[in-house]
Amino acid sequence: MPPTTSRTDRLLAAKVTRSSASELDRSNIARAFATSGLVLKRAQGVYVEDEKGKKYLDMTAGGTTAVGYSHPRLTKALVSQVSRGIDHIDRQTMITEKASELTDELKTFVPNPLAKGKAVFGHSGSDIIEKAIRCITNPKGDGDKRALPLLQSPGFHAHALSRFLSPLVCGRFESRR
Image 1 (cartoon, one colour):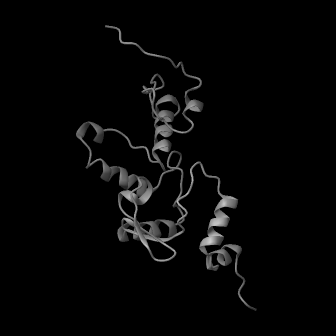
Image 2: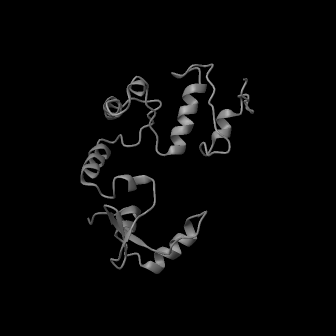
Image 3: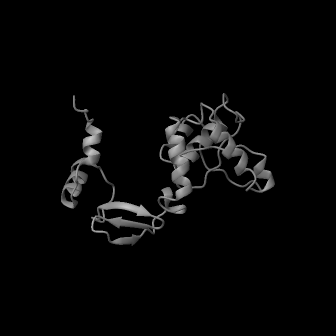
């Protein structure tokens, strides 16, 4: 009996051309901005490479660009963690050995007052802001139930900030001198 292949295996093995990738992108991915039209095939260090092998210096920010794509140490750590099956655990409600070890190690890199604090892990800056606000406004968490976030306006403070602040009193605070 021949081995069966999953839909995912067939999609991964399929040869996607530039035109078919572009068409699939237009048909299936909602975008807020126009694309460059480049169909990227791989990335290494600070470079991304298109389907023709032409390299481009990636000057964007976020994601892996801070350490470079396919960094050997990060790739090894990622494969190790994913193979354990706990690569995407909600660190707000569950404990993992690696997150606890990382928090302890991070405290050695920050100034003393911060080293006495606690860490919040997330997937993006927006995610971190939202989790930090939950920590200080949720009396069932580690935060002080009387604490309120102080935010600068105008400013970006996460994608769904309003849903966390809606029960709180929001308004302008003026200096009392």
